[in-house]
Amino acid sequence: QVQLVESGGGLVQAGDSLRLSCVASGRTFTVYTMAWFRQAPGKEREFVAAITWTGGMTYYTDSVKGRFSISRDKAKNTVYLQMNSLKPEDTAAYYCAAGRPLERYTYSTRQYDYWGQGTPVTVSS
Image (tube, rainbow, N blue to C red):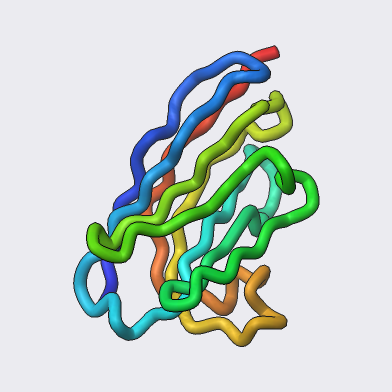
């Protein structure tokens, strides 16, 4: 089992920045991709960004490219999501996920075995 704990969410204004953190514990050697997903009220959970634990390859959904950046600190078993130039449409609960997805399925929620409890991000206009 792998446990994931997110932090860093909050209420900000449009144009502000936030950094989310996800600390992994347990059998972390069993996963090789860490990702962030988000879910707005009344909408499906959607992919935001992912990073491979070993090689550091990154993936982003188009709507956040150039604004968000995912990184990892292997010594701390922590993944970060730096979010800049936030927009009201970024408002959602943000979830950390861990798993072993095939590269072409990196964007699919079904490829991830472990999930955090979520941290809320609200961006006011």
